Amino acid sequence: MAADRSPLLEPGWQYVEAPRLDAFRRGDWELLARQRQVFDAGQQAAHALRMLEATAADPGFGYQVNNYRHSIQAATAALQDGRDEEYVVVTLFHDVGFTVCPNSHGAFAAAMLAPYVSDASRWILERHQIFQSHHCHDHPDEAVDPDGRERWRGHEHFAATAEFVERYDITTIAAGLPEAPIAVFAPMVARILSRPPRRILPP
Image 1 (cartoon, one colour):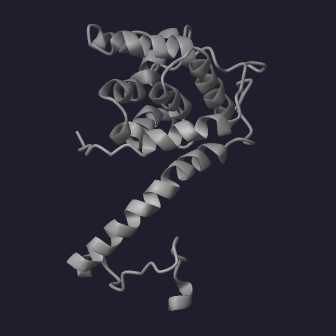
Image 2 (cartoon, one colour; image 1 turned 90 degrees about the vertical axis):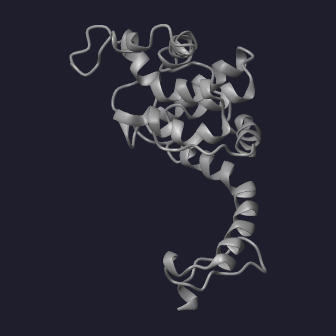
Image 3 (cartoon, helix red, strand yellow; image 1 turned 90 degrees about the horizontal axis):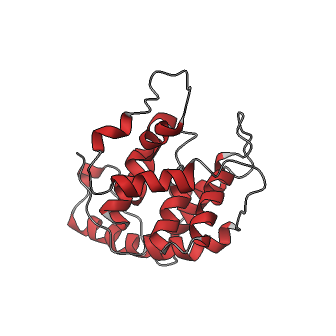
């Protein structure tokens, strides 16, 4: 049985021996909390970047660049414009779920980053795909509503989301645009994900 266990990150770490969550006791939870704090500090940013990097060589379905390159182009443009680190990281990951949950990829990215970013950034992530529809002229899918964003007209984050989509989303899908190496963004991702996380409850 022991041979089947996944390796632990650090020597000296311990496994919880209880085989079911309902058999865990206080000491088990405390053990996991101690080890997880170290684990997250060293691994979370790497895991997030690896999730994006896993798509780097993926084929596309018609855009000039794949989703990975779109993400890199968008983050590069935000960086070149002098946006702050949070904004650049949000831009890097805004479409991280595009190929696995295309119809809810904004919510996917928001769920991933919301504990570490501002309410404004979370709002942008959650709604950017709806705001994008405003620019999809002559789209045959009735679900793509050019006026869908209007339900939030007057919201404090409306203008910022419209700007995000216009500057960094709809314009970064072409071959030949600047693409910084992902290593440029890695320290920023690490710093954002090292912030003390907020508790985000389901709506």
